[in-house]
Length: 216
Ligand SMILES: [Zn+2]
Image (cartoon, rainbow, N blue to C red):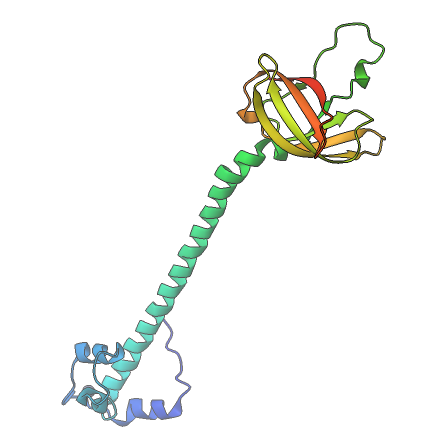
């Protein structure tokens, strides 16, 4: 490592002023190290010796610089460890928590389910209930034109025995095509495949709409 030029002229002077080639009265490295680590009282004779012995002062300054560098590295290492930990937690959160909720929504456009009955209008054949994928999280239902915009309460009931499976809120609004749409965040992954009835009613009202729905 290249020796850095000491910018302090007084210290420079002290580093050469007291050569002490025979190291007379030098306390030894362990004592100097203890001084660096602040483990000795300020009036310890070794402190005084530093002012009278250039080699010991040099040793002291080198040990001190080394110690400071290690302290700095320790702080840097701790910071780096924190960054790595934060990155890991972020990754873990995204992989195991965020994605488990948003898995489908992030990969697919929201599911649109037509419950208006309009697509079957004029058809004489047996109506096929719309199908919702088991992995749907974010769903937009196209509902009846008579459904007023506002907050709705939605229920999903098993078709076979009318057992309540899910209850969740939604909002009806009018889209650009003039259709009434009911938007809701619902996790169909907890719903077993099968036939269901979807019931929706304006909050505080008793007028329910019902449509069949198949989850697969
Ligand atoms: Zn000395």
